[in-house]
Image (cartoon, rainbow, N blue to C red; front, side):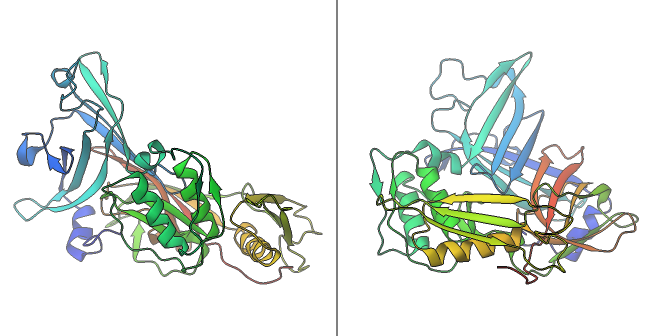
Length: 372
């Protein structure tokens, strides 16, 4: 959660009367170039969407007056030739000091002239990684830790890259070769450390553990009813992403035979016992960063710990809250159900504040023993 998001005064304002605020700024090469001041670029409406498990985590789409169409002006304010949008959102408590957070930084990607307006689509800083492919086959530097190698790869592609805190262990980088795709190179390093890589709301790059795979304590409780911010909610149970056997295949970059390991739930007391009523449900992981049998077996066990968890997910519609970050651990108290500890996995946040925010959550998926 962004700093200040748990303030009691802010939480109370969200659940009562307040005025939402949003400011869009246009920047180029580190300098703000629009002239709209504190008001920001005029817009009609828009939405910020964010999904933790995708490379481009955040996408911003908004509509502006037709007069801002850049036509053939390469230096136009919303032309897609190097300009970026920085978005700030918050709430204003009457005459008090507003709460405000940066919620997006990314390039103008595809403006489009429509009837009486222009739509503008933007992608976050992960898009810069995907755009800056390798100029030829690139070899990993095995003397680097995985986090050091991630920083090197990102900086080689994005000269002005900045980074926030990582929370992964500093394992060594295996011998790898990447052909063209810098984003896939980052994926391989993240997979090797049980992490996701992505850009935060302010544009900083991070490499962080998959948040539903380790124990966490909720930093906040959201609820429905009087004094709550949840408008409506839907809990869901599903076997779609539950598996009781995980197969890991390590594809060797040096041409040697692949390494192979399998982990299965062989505990008869487990609800996902491979010989029980749940049935057999397998998941295969092909990964280049696993280079020996021990690593493959460890990854298979870890993958099974995550994949066999029976859990519920929640979807909620709530008062727009720009302080929320992907990966936040929250407690949901709604529909008279037992409080559920959930991880924020995706959301859709309206810019103009007169609509509700939708958010999707995932339960923690932790080991409970019985693997082989």
